[in-house]
Length: 305
Image (tube, rainbow, N blue to C red; front, top):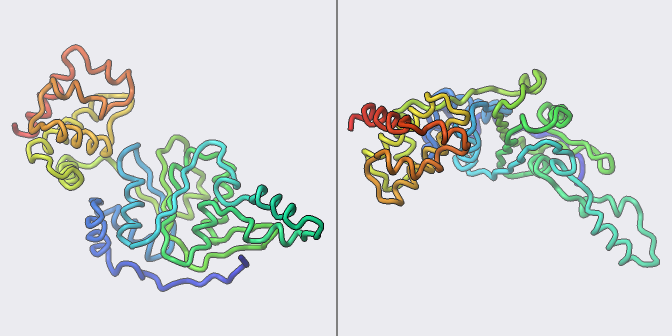
């Protein structure tokens, strides 16, 4: 591995318009609103990272996956967490292999250049994306869970698309990856990071769009059940719960109901399958004492059934 000069590819090489990208995303079973489709198009056309924020389960990670599918690109994912460091995000040296190399040399001397060459480097997601010659979508997932120190380190990568390895020099991207960062906003990100990114807030979808998503992602779901399930989830989101369900939970629940052979909702089946939607005990308790039946009734009224 060696340092290389940055070589930019033509802008807009992937899609000629927002409409074209939106159609490609639909082909990947993802239904973006116009604002999200525009943000993703600009990320590819301007070679600029895009930061997607929103509540858990609204489709931020799925947007990056769908974009990779639409571009016929490789998805490289860095899952962020507290304590994430360079060794797990960028690279580390394969000390075991280095030691074996020293032993194999036996009496022969081993130079530092040999031991700290590319063959002994373990490439983590950021370095793998920077070095890639093929089309790549780099997903930096839940950046808000990483420490502020790592967020500061990420600035170099997003500013210049390069990584410095002391023993080898600076590695610059031959072909810039499309970078998608996601955040559940568990903490506020620094302005310096935001300035380097396009931004889009993903909200919960309208009832009509959520029904369309369920139809697309749950083969075999009945028309009535798709509308009823989406309407009930929408009602839950207005019920002042600690962790309201996202679109991902709507899809999981609709799949569960379909597997059970259901074509309509009633309070009994909702109660027995509620664990597909709500993952916090306090929320389950909050729906006792007739509240659940009332929400089911409200959803059926909205669905017109």
